[in-house]
Image 1 (cartoon, one colour):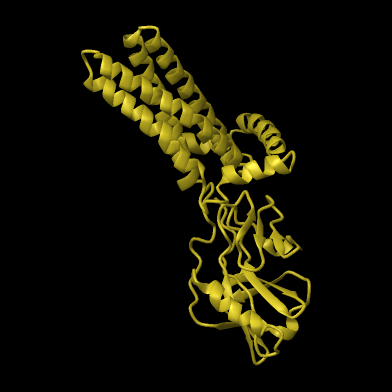
Image 2 (image 1 turned 90 degrees about the horizontal axis):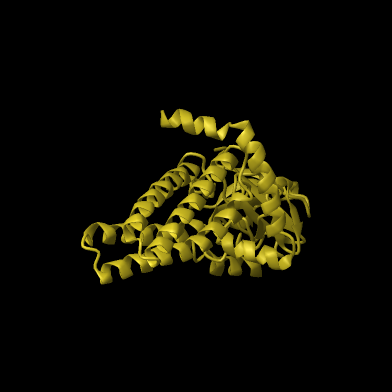
Amino acid sequence: MFQRLLFGLSHQKRIDGFARTWQTRAHRLLTANPGAKRAKDALNGTWLGHPLHPALTDVPIGAWTAALVVDLLDRRGTRAGRFASSVALGTGLAGAGLAALSGLADWSDVNRRQRPVGLVHALLNVAAVGAFGGSLWLRLRGSHSAGKALAVGGYTLASAGAFLGGHLVYTLGTQVDRNAWAREVDEFTPVMEQSDLPAGVLTRATLRGEPVLLYREGERIFALADTCAHAGCSLVSGRVEGGVLTCPCHGSAYRLDDGAVVHGPSPYPQPSFELRVRDGQIELRLASPGGRKRRAAFAEAAASPAAGYGSASSLEPVQP
């Protein structure tokens, strides 16, 4: 039953039409100028290496859960209990604001199937905030019984919103690292002839059945995952400028040097491979977290016909 309802929601054209209009407006607002873009990057979690939204939602959910527990335990309505539940409600409301902003930043880049579900998820949470805000207002006016009843309603709405949030991530794949299932290649493996790699052109190669992206700039060669970590788009049709590769779909930008995120919406770096050229063959292997030091050694020999330097890994685009 739930699966049918969720499937129908993902394909509800009327809701999606409304959602598309507001998504476009949200995206324009969040990318209107360099300052707005920096704020969006922060809300996407590019500085964290992980989406910020799920971390922030723990604050209101935890605080509102605490308020309900206090309400249940404090049946006599003591002064201390009323104060504790009111503080918990206020904390949840404050945390909900930041959680909503980060959620809006993520939602502004979701795909068609995710968009209507995200809108309903947001509306349920807005309704929950209204209910908890009303509960706090009633308590401050002395109507504690009514405030407790309204808080139960708010928690029900928040739980429904959280259910849809889980569906967005675990079923529809929103903000999931698309390279999480990439095969680990620990040994240098040939992917193509060095002479077949043109300069200044993003070129796709295959590493043990998986596509990787190569780019030659002068005598230096870079390699990154072809699959964008954000939404699974192929990066081979992206653009390179100033040592930064930009995804053609949503504009996530990565350093060619090591795959680090320069701009969101992706919070995840592109998997990187160490690279060398041996006997005219470009060879790759998975870079470890400490791979940058080893890549520095390769960089010293980058001009040599026997060695090169770079980074990469990948998966075919995964459609949720």
